[in-house]
Amino acid sequence: MNFSCSDSWNYSIILRYPADKIIKMNKIYFYNDDNSLKCQHFFDFNVSNLELEMMKIEILKGRILRFNYINDSNLLKKLKQWSNKEGFIFKYVDKWKAPQLILKTSIKQYLKENKHSQVRRNYRLYEKEKVKYKFYNSSNNDILKLWNYVLDIDFHSWKNIEHSDMKSLNREDLQYLPFLLTNKNSSNLVVVCDLNDYPLAYSLMFKNEDDIWYAVKWGSSDEGRTKYAGIFALFNHLEYLYSLENKLNLDFWGRRNKVYDDLKNNDIVRSHIEIYKEVE
Image 1 (spheres, rainbow, N blue to C red):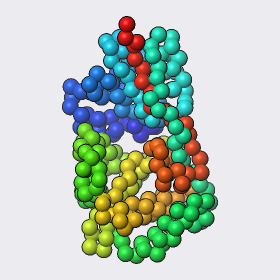
Image 2: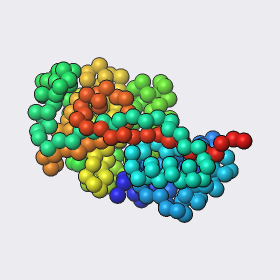
Image 3: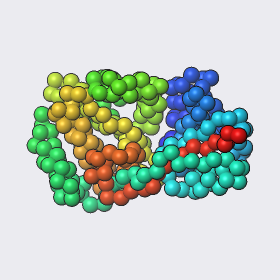
Image 4: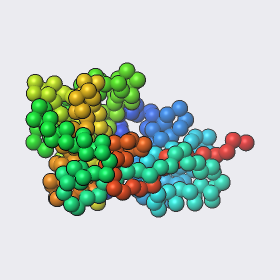
């Protein structure tokens, strides 16, 4: 099961957005953002003929359908073929190679011997300085308490100034918290605090049923950035996830992030696309 198609994820959509802004087409949810219908599911999922017919109705009304973070998959081929058949415009808004880390050997060894010198330096610093911090994990700590830390970190970061923190992004925090609370075997959160429990950085991961972890959200406060707490949170999280099964299959989800690109040893082609009717 793609976690972005799970019941927990879908219920969160209803919590996050105003009811009159949500358009449900059978099992697929869209958010109506100024006549652009943004699909709330990612990567790869099934689209039925019924759902295609419902999408067609919306496009004929003049609406733009937007799909973000779609893998180079059967879904992408199906949407492209269907668009061409219906005479709609199929547009790549962006296309890139999304970084992945697939590992069966020691994660510590991988980081220590990484081909990028910055990763090696940062990992040495992490091993030296980690005693100065507390690393909290949602597997054995109060999740709501940790989530309060996450929101505090978000608020005290550059994201708040630029209105790209989770609360400013249409209450993005409400999208993630229910899944974290109700799917403990398929989610994990790491929060880094100083020794006085002042929150500095966090890393949030969700897992699909095919055992691929996804880097859902990663952040650091302004103070945390000066102390490298963000990269420390990520290193700690990689070590923890690897320790669960002595292997790691991680998709960094995002795009054009130097840290992710330096950590990867694999990638997957991913796209943002739009489908719409040409204006006559």
